[in-house]
Length: 248
Ligand code: PEP
Image (cartoon, rainbow, N blue to C red; front, side, top):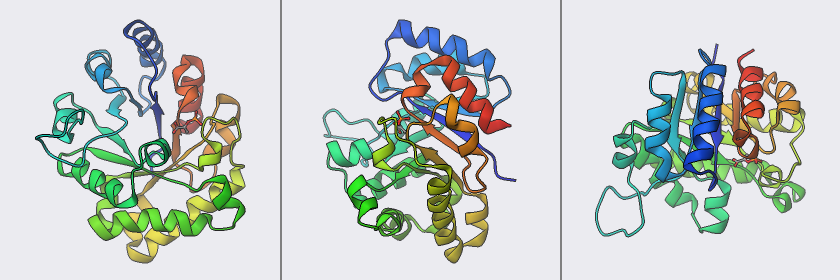
C-alpha cells in the first residue's frame, strides 16, 4: 500500500517564537506519523533542531536550479541538504504565477533537487479559468510532461506530486472529493501509461483549502495519498487533525 504523506507549506509566515510553539505542539502529537513541514529558509535550522529524531521531516518551499555561484538571493539544493532537508516544494502555483516560473524552470529545479538527494514535491494544477474552459487535464499533463521530458518517468519514484487547483489555494474553496479524485486518477493513469510500477507507488497529494473538517473525505479517496497544507498547517490542532485523518 502507498504511504500517505501530509506536508505543511508555511509559506512566508512565522517567527522564531511562533514556530517554536507550533513545532512543540505538533511533534509529540504526531509521534509515529510520517509528516513534513516546509518552512521559510531562515527557519530551517530551527526546524532541524526541533524535529530531528521525530517522524516529522522538514524541507523548503523553493530552491535554485543552479548549483552555486553568482545568483544573488538564491538558495541551492546542497544548502538545503546542509540542513538535512528531506523535501522541497517545486512549482508551487504562487511561484509560477507571482515569480514567473515556467514549466521548464520548474523541471530544472526538480532535477537540481533530486541531484542533491532531496525529494521534490512537484505542484501541478489548473486556474479557475482553465477549469471553466475544460482544460484541467491538458494543463496538468503539460506541467507533468515538462518534468518527465527533462528527468524521465523513473524520476517520479523519488518525488511526490501535489495536485493543487489554483482556485482552491487559500480561497476556502476546496475541490470536492470527486473532483480531486478525478484529477488524481488522471495523473496516476498518465504515469502508468509510461511506467505502471512508478505510478502504483507515486504519492499524489491534494492541496487547496484542506482543513480538519474536510480532510477525512479527501484522504479516503483511492488516489489521494495525503495533502499539501497551507493555511491550516499554521494551526497546530488543524495540522495534527489533518495528519491523523490521512494516517487512519
Ligand atoms: C498551499 O499553500 O499549497 C495550499 C494548498 O494552501 P491552502 O491550504 O491555504 O489552500
